[in-house]
Image 1 (cartoon, helix red, strand yellow):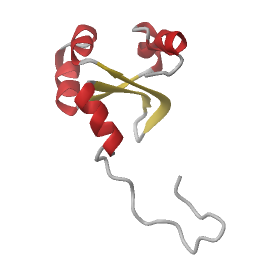
Image 2 (image 1 turned 135 degrees about the horizontal axis):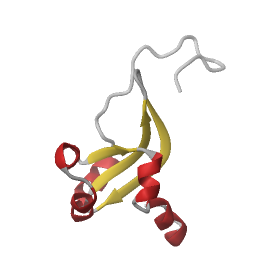
Image 3 (image 1 turned 90 degrees about the vertical axis):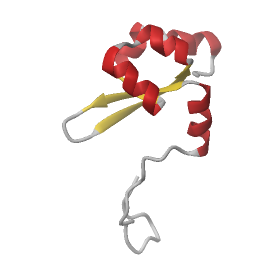
Length: 99
């Protein structure tokens, strides 16, 4: 979180880039990353859910432009309700590691 912390002289003046970190790059090689988020007019509210599913599973769940874009980018935002509907939270409780 940007802002002045104890001992800081001033807040950072740059924003984060959108390039995936090394860990995310590895996940993108394994499949498609689903990031739980809620879109707003001026920002995206991230909700903490993060899953990697195979490309085959992604193709079974999503179709059309959403699927094509997700396959090209190797990640896709998913709202909490959709995450529940496709059973991602059930997988978390079954395997206790949430991936």
